[in-house]
Length: 523
Image (cartoon, rainbow, N blue to C red):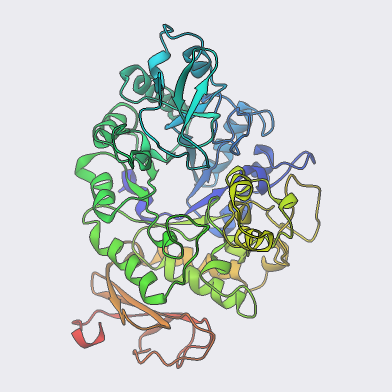
């Protein structure tokens, strides 16, 4: 169905600051993205998710928006956006914009008015109190309430103090945001990724209310769908930190008309405690059973599938082996992800098997969250730097390596040797493997639509599952270890990916055969 094109789609995320620099100023830009559209076309993706390019003081890398309907000169012009839309559509690729509706920059005209006087008409567009009504922390460190010297009251900022939270209880706020979204859609945009959308409803009296999922969340989402999204054939995906399977099911259920899918965080929260700066060991059974819960628990809802994005460390360093088995583990991580049910998201460089940045010192880091944590932490210096190398968002924000040149950049290059140029014509490369996986999704209906069944749930080395649809069964078997393993599962049928026999270190295999009745002993 055309209106649900995203069910068979693969989405590619571009972080414009680090993707391609067209003018040599060290910062990627929209003309740079336009110049690399053939890479996306060659890869076979169906949509481009473009991270923020709007006017912004860049306190939080553009997620502090000061004008929703413009382009920061750092990245280009509105004409560049129009040219990008035209270039994408000419190649059959849709454009999904990253949109931040929970908060604005403190330099947005709305907030400038709001803080100017307690009687200003936009005062109640944000949260203002004489005294902090709770002890919420900011997710970027410190308190979530900032005293404003102009009026002597406190405003709420769930993130940086320069990112003031909008008060969605005010219908004028909701109307202004919906009008702005329609403006972009009328310009040719095909969907939105909605930043921390689960936080738009606040329960001020709840000590954990800063994590979102307030009492009016579903009401707000349904109104937003009705006022901005309905009938346009879009893709909407909401970023929903802390979402449970049940909450995700409600937000993505088609009959509820809220969102098409959400980014759940469960699987990327399993290797640490409350914060990512407190790591814990992660076993393969824990990871694959988390995926299975989301596969089986959404009902008629829909999964988003991702390892990497601009906020996450590189998957090959986190879940794979970024040393001897980097290529094999990058391929296997991709195979497992893309063969689950849902819409896969590929983050720039993931298709090359890029690893974490490997920065040596704090002077190499740019991310506000990382720098704040570093300043506040009382850990020894060596431990702090080790945790940054493991978990900092800057691991994902290093420049896209198109070739061996190392032009000046706003942030250092990853300690890496992979390039697009080296992999483009190599049939055994990670890039070639991604092309194959994306083609499978387009060619074999079971990849997008098939039922899911997890096999060998307690196996410490093998991740195996089936996808079954209209008489076809796909068997996916992956070795998540550095040793050869015989998975003890049949390798008959048509081999689509991998080889027959025991699986080599970090090897994965996909076979297709006629569906058969399931043997309970295999599960």
